Image 1 (cartoon, one colour):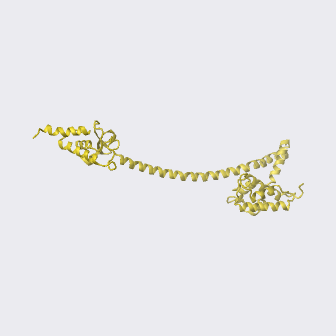
Image 2 (image 1 turned 180 degrees about the horizontal axis):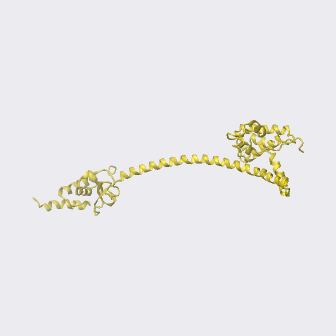
Image 3 (image 1 turned 135 degrees about the horizontal axis):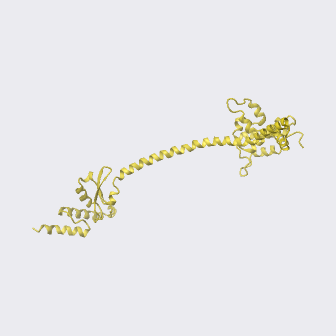
Length: 302
């Protein structure tokens, strides 16, 4: 019977030649050689990449630390044998492997945590998407109010300036030429239409209820006028109101007829305000507007 060292030397030599770990019992060495031979016999389609640079084994699968290290050395592929294996506690579970392998320890748990965090972020993003929509509606309402104020403030300031200048003329007897001009301008404003401001008089519990009078002046219900932001449209409504309310001059039948045609077409278009945009197609509303704008307003006009 050959000496034990001779019996062990041959498999050790074969392991070294194959690049395998040459330490351990003869049974360990033979097992490694058999595993290596089995991998070599696999077809290229069946075998995985034999190069491996990460080893990771859990205690729950192999037992003690020494057994874990021994099993890790027999890991599939040609892992760097010169690297020292380490044992590390990750989230309450022991893992053994080289540095690269230990980097994967607890990976499923980390993936699960990331999925939960991603789901929470998606829910938050969805909530934030809905919030701008509500804020946008509120901002649009505020802009509507701002637009109305922009339309009304210049005209209203002229009327209030007229009040102070009239006081200076009638009570203080010291009105200047500028005051006379302000009074004249204010008188004109007081007798002209102001659809944007007058429409606001019909809002709220204490608002006016005689909408028929408003429609006689402006041709459109006050609730619809407050939605209009088109300066040219507001201006044509104001012109009609001024002619309709004039107690000294009489409007022409042609002016009133063309105004009625414009209002009807404007309402039929669902109050679209882009009828004067150069890029838009010339519509019936466009033609009615220019026909009205160029029409003689008063019977005694030259």
